[in-house]
Length: 340
Image 1 (cartoon, rainbow, N blue to C red):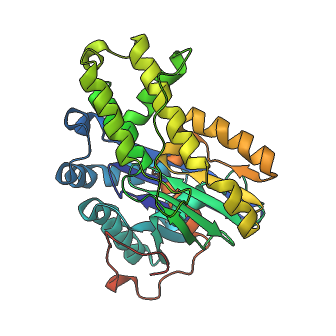
Image 2: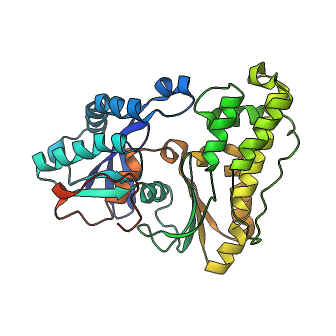
């Protein structure tokens, strides 16, 4: 089965062709158009600009994915698209295009939840993953932990109480004038430092649970920069900037992974999946490998190009879901709930 997957929930416009086989999904093509250059000067995504750019990109990424895969629209067996959640203006670009293609070619159409896509990004490298699995989905907009009993189910266990981990990376990079997006830039600075700066104080909660909060971490960075204003202008080669980035990165990785061992034992998890843009982080990947080995969990983290938003993960999830019998009445949903 050949599936065209389309994704434009935020600031990346992507299309991919995936072949679903008995052994799992095979990536035939992947095209992604980034908008980093457009949103960089603003230090974050501007929704109106993102939506307009997607309208200009969607035809190009679709044509590129088909050409790269060596197939035509008539060769496809299914079209899958992100239905939500996300920025509604961005979602509508590929959502509308997918329905037009499905109608013109008479193809089955599948609307996919964005987070289910991130889970299925791990299926390319680990199609035989044993379940149940803990699934840590972490990005600029999500820091959620789920229990999955298979590739198309996610049961929420906990989520951040305020900001997402990815936001802490982006805001830190902005305060240090490193550029945008912040995650890769902070990671590069952290790797260049031989030692971390003073550790950040982890959050504590009245109920005593090992939960997540990253708003205080952003405030901690802000206070350090205010006490030492030169950090905002020193640049990525400065040892103090590098040490601060390493300290931030160590804090985020440690905090994210702290609840996992107890929950894995409690839920009888056999595997650990980490996906989303923050899963590209080198420290998180290394720490997760140590944790998984210690706890006897099978670890599945997608390759970096499949961690960020992409059409391949949507196609992989769409291959497993039942097609919508009446897609023409469906619409994009900026706040789509799992199971909706």
